[in-house]
Image 1: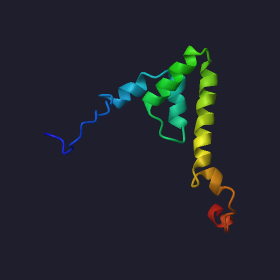
Image 2: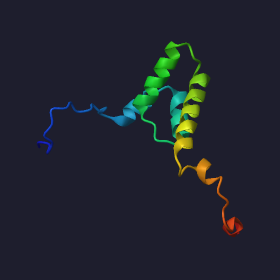
Image 3: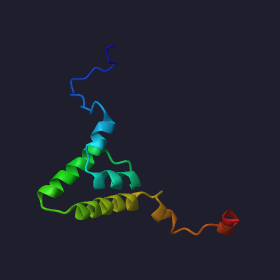
Image 4: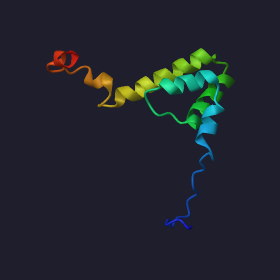
Length: 97
């Protein structure tokens, strides 16, 4: 089946199996991605991990770096929890009953 796209631009290559790319990541990085607030791609995490390891960073330092990057991104989002937590909730006790 041909695509309905007329372009001379190269298509992005995607991994054949995204779960295989995820499973190939180091265990601490997979654990961090599982609890991350943002949907990080395995490719971007692998790139950050490899660069930091080549610079001599420890796994804990890399995970801290990823956490800081995620926090910076979330702080720019006006709908994030940090932005909404500044506004008082009306009748928040009703939800705790």
